[in-house]
Image (cartoon, rainbow, N blue to C red; front, side):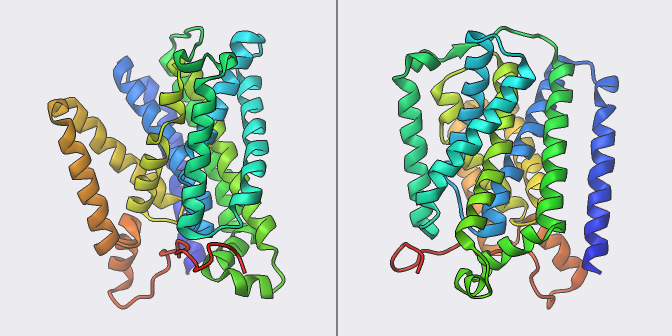
Length: 331
């Protein structure tokens, strides 16, 4: 029964992607195409965040580091070495994979808030490094050659995010790899006793989260034409991705996509009509997330399943988020 429902969700994702391919034929306004492109970008970032947080229970508060690595690698290779766009984006993904391995080896030995704080601190260190490095432009950032073709970037972003979704769906929902990560999420010590290698699996999940984030960052750099440490290595990427994942439903892939659309839609409408009340945005968003954590621990998608299965149905979506262990390290 569960497999059938997942198949229907996958079919729905295919239909949505096919429908989005037709959008530029009906929408010719540059503003709306840019808004849709950014919405798709946030779906991809939420999916990548969920690959680690939702399936292993590790909240990466330094998620923006990989977005920045992808963006800066693409920008530097294109502007200073003359690399083609797609090759530079791919190189950004490779750089993120190497960075995730280096960062993950020490930090994934921690659990809960210890891991979250460690990744946040490392991301801030990378941001400070970018601020003092002339190769990446320092605080002035890097300006890329403008390519003013919103339809092109819409299709590129859609293609990248669609590929990310289907690869993650296969690895996390169909392949044994996803079940192994869920075993670690539920009880890491028991998973180890069953013969799994938590260290290896968590590092692979970390890389699986980092590479898509970097690819999206590379596309973003060329699309936006200008990047700096604040826009690509700031806390916004991690914070907003986390909010989208929690609101939509962790550990589901479909949930983060729904959360990204709803949160980004709210943000766009707010800044369009209530930009003068910017403080109110943070207050409202914080209140929504607080209410979600208390009353919808499985997110919007969890509410949908609960309504279909009945109030007494067991929770299928709520992952453990790795509350801090007394020592902060693995046993």
